[in-house]
Length: 103
Image (tube, rainbow, N blue to C red; front, top):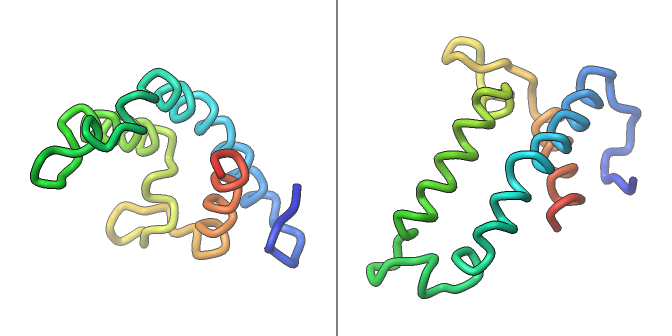
C-alpha cells in the first residue's frame, strides 16, 4: 500500500492500522452502503437550517460509539483526559489507512 509515511511503522502503530481497517470494513462501510440514499442526497442529509438531519446524526453517533468501544475514538488524546496517548504518528497512520479504504 502506498504511504506518505517515510519510515517503518512501529508494530503497535501497524496493528492500529490493521484494526482501523477492520473497524471501517465492519462498522462504517456497511452503514454507508445501507444508507447511501440518505448520505448522498443533500435534501435528506441536511435540514432546512443546514444542520445534519436526525438520521445522519444518529449514524454518526453509532459510529462514534462503536469507535469508542473499539478504542479508536480517543487513541491520541492525553491519558489525563481518558485517552490512550498514542501520539500524532498513530493518528496520521490511522487517517491515512481510512483514506486508502474510503477515498
